[in-house]
Image (tube, rainbow, N blue to C red; front, side, top):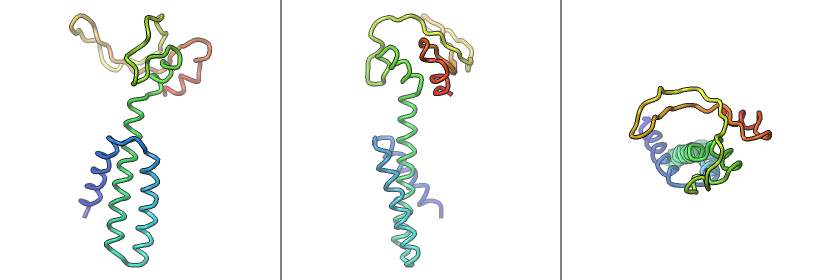
Length: 142
């Protein structure tokens, strides 16, 4: 019974990871819901099932697209790109050296030695990028 919705959702997630327009998926999902209700009221089971499958697929695609964009463009990356430039996912890196950025963070994983450096995983809570950073950027990072 649940194979059709689960399969549709999984297919939608796969499509959403390759696409880049979540608003189109949300519109499709809404239209599919309206068609499903109308078909159910008219007792058209095949149309109802098809519309529900399309709705689940569109919902999975919208969720995947939104999650992918959130992972690729987190608030910290956006704040650093606005302050220094070169932190966008589309660039190769910061254009030259800049001073260290004061940061408040919580240690997520202990330090571990790597080849020529030590790695430490933290969850950034606040970044000080000058007087304008203040609470606005700290709130975005939470």
